[in-house]
Length: 103
Image (cartoon, rainbow, N blue to C red; front, side, top):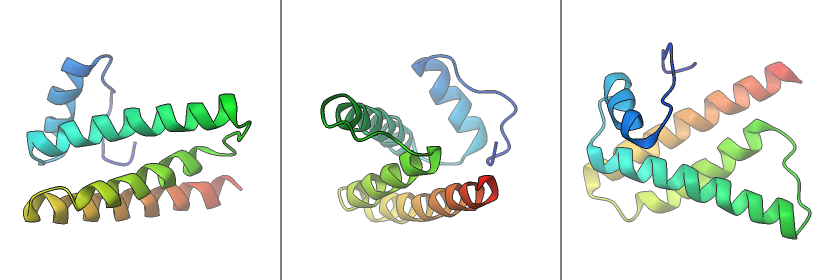
């Protein structure tokens, strides 16, 4: 994994402990991150089920997620906004790097 994790969380309560060990971000950003990922999965599921728009690659999910993060950054405090935008850019660059490598 990109952020240096050797494991992954199995449930939400474990997620908050896990992410705090890997990234020095506020609890607010941890909550925004997990809510945003759930929202993206839900939106893409709706696109796939009802609009027949299938996902072509994992990078597509990450890029869609980054677009939401950039939008939601405007709703955060200045410090959290800066961190969310920086994280979104880094995540998108990493996803696109791996997407090119898989092609």
